[in-house]
Image 1 (tube, one colour):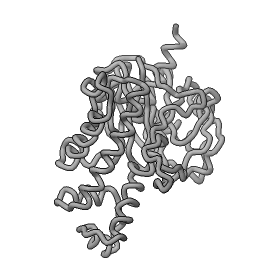
Image 2: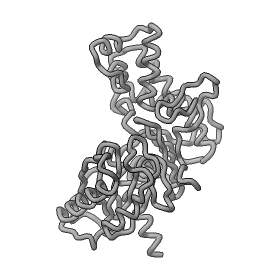
Image 3: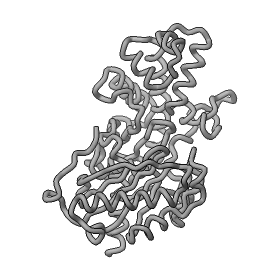
Image 4: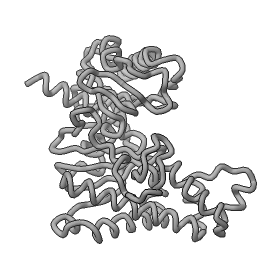
Length: 344
């Protein structure tokens, strides 16, 4: 799902801009004070051209959206910026984003602030997505949530009473690095090499790698025919074959859910939120498919089997609802929080 766009005359001022940086595209949206989207667009990241060039393209895209809405930059109270990878939030630096070497150790927040002439709130992209779901998505009825994002990696966000928990080193909520397998031969993360971490089992590349190992060991599966035809083995392929009844695909998805449930127990026992939200591209179809429902049911079952009784029956676990819009909406919400703090 994605958020619905509302007309300008139904919006509530002040207005905010959210910028969600991805490896391929940068999503940008203008939202009102209630988190409603007025307009959104995307521009190519073009990583090799550098971070400053991307921020200039983002500024131009913002200007176009503002003009499209018959607004001016004076109507924009603040901007929010979400980026992948490690960062130094107090200093506004993006440090070592994966697959973005041209952006390393760049003062991204201040660059965008100077280009737009606006204060810029800065957050990890997964934390921004979590804030979006907390503000106007599936977490909107709760005061505290945690969100796991499942995709090329495993990210996360913790929102407690409207505050994103970023941590001392701007490394808070990195759920992909939770240890779920302490064996000496535990799997290595396909990105950072961390052993036994959740990302080594529940990211999309990890799911594909685990499946490839099973196929290489001689397991029977309808996946074999597709791989033999030259198709790339992906988590999407597993979903498609699981929907057709392939037992191996279903087995891998169920085991992924089990390990995710283990990670969720660790986080819930640490933070004690009201709800856990599952976002990101790898949701196996969500509520709309049998495989998505199976995945969620298995996550919930693992959580309830392992969690302390005080939380096992009271914590809600469900899918995110904002889809790919969560990042820019949440980033705008981070900007809105910064604006409100400066107005006190």
